[in-house]
Length: 166
Image 1 (spheres, rainbow, N blue to C red):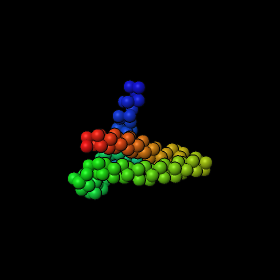
Image 2: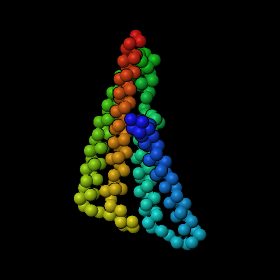
Image 3: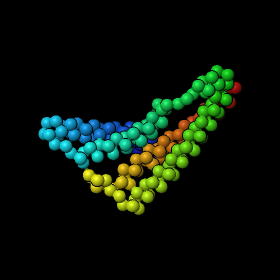
Image 4: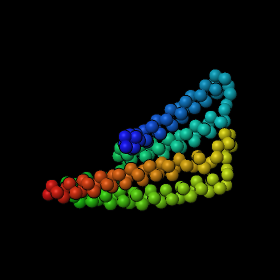
């Protein structure tokens, strides 16, 4: 249970930080090879691009976890002044809309990964199976789905607390 709690609290942090460090190392390595040794490495450029793609999707899940993503909460803020309960209901409705979008992304990104797996396509320089590269999107979207689901549960708890306090 401790391990689950620890991973629940930090999985996006670990993934994003690891990928950012790996990406940064590859970029520095490319610059050193290009400008000091006058050699251009195709494998490191390709690998850094894939690491960056994975970093973007895991960082998006990180942003959702800590609610640091871009949101349009103008109506929620105005409604909160009038009725905190209705404001909370609007937040929950928006989260359900987001879940719908994420489930759409989850489904079609998994289909894309399955297609890539069946085609057996590999990357040009590193010969990495492309389904591994494409796996970053469904993994990030599934993490975001999980985090939005947690926010919905917390939203209902807040709504119950608001109703009990009135």
